[in-house]
Image 1 (cartoon, rainbow, N blue to C red):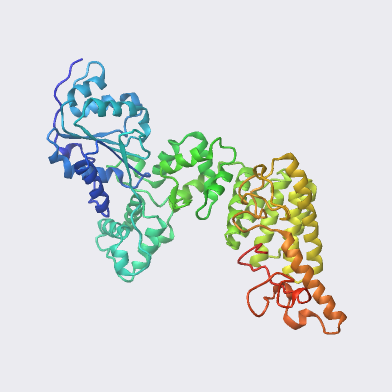
Image 2: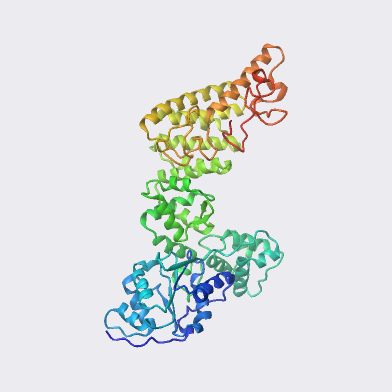
Length: 575
């Protein structure tokens, strides 16, 4: 082994070329400086999704801190290293070492007594070299390592600092847009692309919409700004998609010349199971919770590990107890969704439709369920077709986008062919609720009674088998309400009466409709006319004089049953 002392290059020759001024990262730079200089951290990993600006931020930090490290500062760009075994050789080359043997030993010998700063840029695809990083920490105790990676290294000495998207403005106010980090970056890059561009009160709204649509992702903002060379701002906003977000700049890595390439790089680094689940996530119109993710993950051996991988690679972002895909990432996932079979796409769309129903987003429920039904081939499982028809019909019922009755009748027909009591109960319950809300109480009660009878059969059938809703026994007297949310368990569809509140429990509805029917009959027999003519349709009437009460509990006792409607904003909100 033959080694020389490390060469101290001019930083301008090793820092990535073509770097524009850093905008909006002042707080991140302060935190990084405190960690490396004041906190004494020896391994800091700057993580975040592709295009978030890790390399740019790390390069600026190195430029500021290099004079404080007497032993030197070096940048090792790893994007061209395809095999983790050659990472030590790449470091040795940057240090100017002549290696005739073990590169790891040569690097350790050269840096053993150095007090320096080493930047390992783009580490995510060479994670097999993590033992080399651990050896550097042990063998060169005065060296500080700064690593940029889409995923952490998972070393005990590691301090991970995630880089978040730039802040976006909450309104279209000119001053707020100009103060936001995303607005400042877009305006600065727009002036470079089109020197006459200026942020004004007239275009502040368009800028605000654009930076929000791109989720504050710096690379996406820069690529969109570059389009101002040939398109006006409103045209860029109108054509915003992955194809538009591309650049002809030649002094940046190929994966950063288009947003699609950046996302593809992250996608290709995922384990195969996570890639398949990521493709399914493209159907979600908004954010989602862990239950919905587990339903979409389907056969994944460990859904939590898959979700962790997606978060670590920056493809899924966490927002408190929910998760989301930024708009560009969602578009990329939607493109990948096309690789799924029609049945898998339909099943995934139904999970998203069920979520929308539980959250009261009925137009979304209608659209997703209708599209899912259109995707399902004639040979698709009857249960899947029933769920699609039921959700489609419920969406139509709550939105009046098209007549719901034919759709829900078809759902009942398909449910009958499935032989599954739960399917029969759900289809009849949905049809009964719709008929009741349309004023056809007799028919509504009949279908709800059939639904309740089917649910009772499901309790006996499903509980004996022990394969429903994870084997949890339903609470007594709940009409077969499932113990888990709609998107969990065997049947990811509303109607389960789970935590989401979107269940179709027939028992409470039956009680109130029977009371209303009895009141009508008494009114007719007593010559007082129909209750419909006196107070409007009972199934849609709010009780007067105070809060809603269940039948037989009002001031008039059993002789004065009060009826309340199932409000469109809260499906299945029966008490």
